[in-house]
Length: 134
View 1 (cartoon, rainbow, N blue to C red):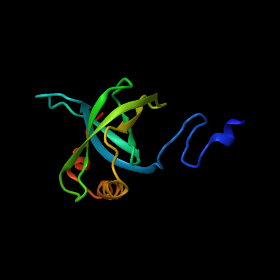
View 2 (cartoon, rainbow, N blue to C red; view 1 turned 135 degrees about the vertical axis):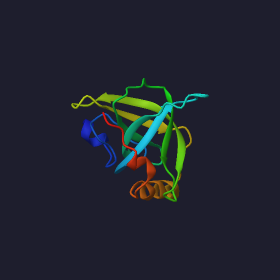
View 3 (cartoon, rainbow, N blue to C red; view 1 turned 90 degrees about the horizontal axis):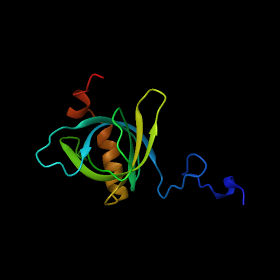
View 4 (tube, one colour; view 1 turned 90 degrees about the vertical axis):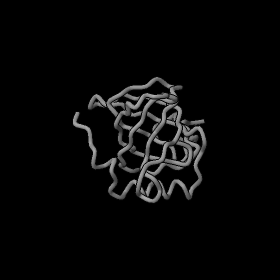
């Protein structure tokens, strides 16, 4: 069977198998390896897409597949933050020396949560105002 016959509309490159529809976005986020008791070092990232099963981060910091991350995203109400636990599934170096880190949520979110997070991320927040100079 040809490779193209095995692809669904949600899939990206040949060989990728997406279980959930991804929604493109551009949202600031912060993350750190979990659990980190007493460690308050958070790395800055941009969420470039999100689904009910996971998200993709663009960041200057590489993490190994299998690493569990605390990912801080804007709260649904647009104020404060929410922490989501995600496992690094895929790591790809980008041409600009950043890393695309594909993560799967440890607990899948529902469609309502996804839409609320996408909407909250499109509103100005404290995370967006505290950008890190690289």
